[in-house]
Length: 174
Image 1 (cartoon, rainbow, N blue to C red):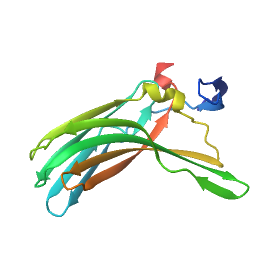
Image 2: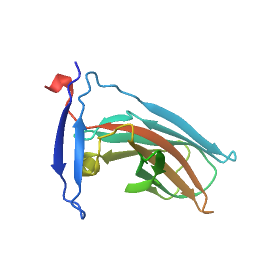
Image 3: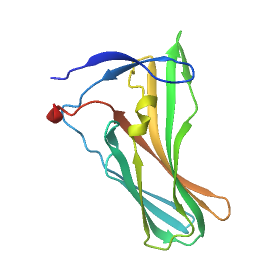
């Protein structure tokens, strides 16, 4: 049985907007690990791993690591960026906002060596007030994490990971 409860809550924002939130408890917590590789020009090969892409904003952290398998270029820095994009439909017209960066984490500065693993952790509890889970067929909010590695030539190598956020209690916790 899936329980839902609707509440209205004022958040302290400059516009004092009213946000509606729908809490949908997850009957069975789905763990979705993610692993991918990025490579270019036979000079770079990076493996990105995350433990889970379905996260609870109330208590989870986004954990992952970047493994530098092949490094023939000198890198300047690596950033992990949390992004949000919303789209909505009004009068049969779809409006899509650009991606907005809401959290930047500089995970590394300097040149990694082959085989080096750089872990990262992004706490999500501060995003609760920015989170809107009221999604209807007229409104959709997408969340993603972008891992961006830049070299000394000014080139950027990046990979985007789509996330699923929810906010509520596990049924086991009730």
